[in-house]
Image 1 (tube, one colour):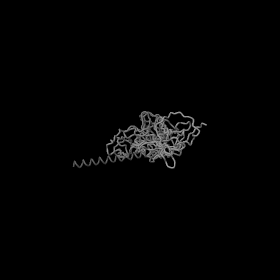
Image 2 (cartoon, helix red, strand yellow):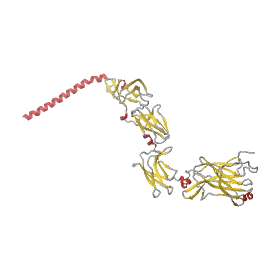
Image 3 (cartoon, rainbow, N blue to C red):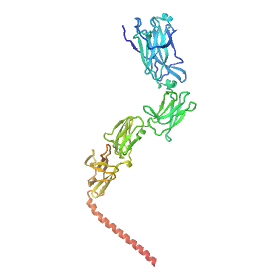
Image 4 (cartoon, helix red, strand yellow):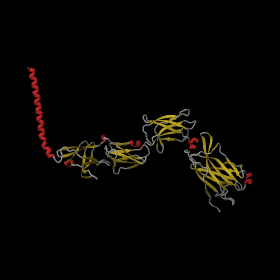
Length: 494
């Protein structure tokens, strides 16, 4: 009866990522008979075609014919820093008249399947029939970090008698490979920061012998984009040191190094990775288009919003202004460049607020004055705009009414006349622009009225008497000066 037979094996010999691997000077294929003492059995390893046709198995062949299969990673080393990882496959085979050996095949993405055959001399098969023989082969050369599919078949190939296993070869993050396999040796980078001179003193160790070494600064994202020219450290130089200058201490600014060999692995160290506050300095504003924008120089997960400053520690978010950003540019259209309008950056690590507009950037402002029995608010604007104002009572929540809209032309101040009612305690004026998408609300309370309310009549009657007293004082002073001058002239004449 034909039955599909697939055994999922445990790679007993696969080492932990940071363990030392077994060393060998050369790969080999050998076999031994497991009797009272281990006796070497002659066998031969050679290349084998992956394309062969199978036939129906004989009745005496079953799943116990091949057992004890293990796959592990070992290291072939010619000398220091000249190692390469290999796969070691072992299996226990019970030989029969119809079984002459095993075929070991290796397949990985992007590579053709390769196979090796381990066979026994015909003269020994009769003597070994029925005996268990340990087969050992470690001549599969593999690359670090490779995902491989190992298949074991009988020779000749019997249909449905196949054993397979998937395995990942340890990558260059394995300490043993990183120090001994050329394509994994990228060097160890150490640095000292000179904040005043904006320089990085770089020291490199553990690099690949007989090769020059490259250093540069780059911005790390999906790839590391270079920001400076490469510095080449010659292999003959006893000290592998260099100095790199930087302009901004960005968290994604990294020192990258690699040997000059083809397809060399690169290593990166990021001296300022915790300096996330540097990211929030790139806010720009187009005054003509009234567009505020920010583009992160480093990939970052953040929520960007506009807010109105309410003191040193508080900033109230503006409605519908939040944008989630990872690496794309953030744009806010039609923004009022008011000093109290700020940008808030929120990440998992906290929030940062940047206020890009100073008084010199303000498109409009307010001035206040008191005339007779009226308070006057003057709107001065450097652009054509429109504002709306409210008379409010300073309560929780604030209550506002008397809404009025005022159109203001460029460099033509507009007055808003208010009654003396605004001089009462708790009365405020709230003003904001309405011709933009994002604007702040300017609030002015506690007016300092020159004509105190409600005693304006009393204040008005006192003014003439004060004027009369001042005039009398001036006349007396003038008369005294004339008399003194006349007296001096009289003395000279006498």
